[in-house]
Length: 138
Image: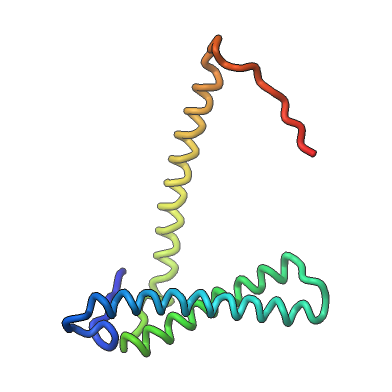
């Protein structure tokens, strides 16, 4: 569900389109800064006790993602003066299930079309085709 604000920064007026673009830019930059600041901070704190591992990087990414949600919610509440219904938890399970099904169907369609095309071109004899080479990995 798409929810557009009509108060605060996005209130009606002559320059609404320009305010909307500026708000979009500010929101995107703020979210990127929030993610990077929190993720780097978590990595820095974890690096004080030991060398960083992939688990630490995952933890930093999760913390940065939570920072994105918090900063987006705070910015929308303050700038657009509305509740952030797109982050509500009640419809999340249904939306997650639908998204996973749609994504699964899309991935299956891509894999099926690609595998058929590859199988067709690999099985078709061609006298002009170069001989297969063996690639050695270092």
